Length: 304
Image 1: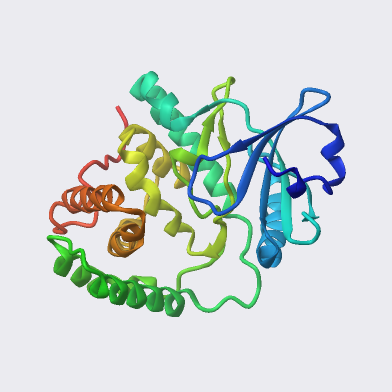
Image 2: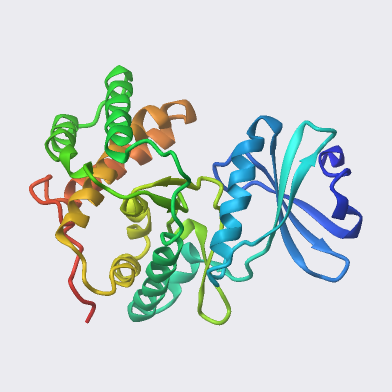
């Protein structure tokens, strides 16, 4: 590896192991680190042009860490590689990726871990958004319009695209008067760790943002592929078992917005990614019974 990236980070002389990590979609360069005491760490290095984004990420991760949740906690933040990069040094969350851990345990255990994940997300959402945010309805309506334009301009089409777009247009008024909070930004089982003491740890805050707290549930479609009981637990845990009807309307709106945008997003990555997103869109279409309902067919009020 190119050690010039890290050789001006103050703590690097105490590191006995530095290994590149290639998992995930982030542009960050990531490294698994062990120091001379055996402590495990995670280092993220970004281009200096992202300094302000990463400064804010560090600030709000510290706020989340203060809530007592198990997560990657910031230890150090600064500039490295002779001023060309910015780094964030974090604690390492020990355990197994939820994506691989959940299929090994009973559905009841999956559900119980989902409850914990929902309660964690609820805590994260107690952190207020930074000031001077544009109103959510205006901001997200513009986002929907941009994503529909990008989809219409791309070469790949979904079988049910007209119905998806009609659903968005019909339900867009649900965005009015929504609150904004700090968001993890990518809350799904790929970014959750099952720890040895059967807790849930949260990693990868690098997509964090400010917005409607319920938007975070747009990632449920990916978690459902592995464990529907976990997703049920996440929803029940977040709402303390009292899920409002409006939640489902908004969750469907956010999921379908992502479906429309996923096709132009996937095209540069190649045919396999496009096929994956088309299959994902077809699954979502069936989840909502051909868009005849906004409550997914897998949802239950309780887990027996």
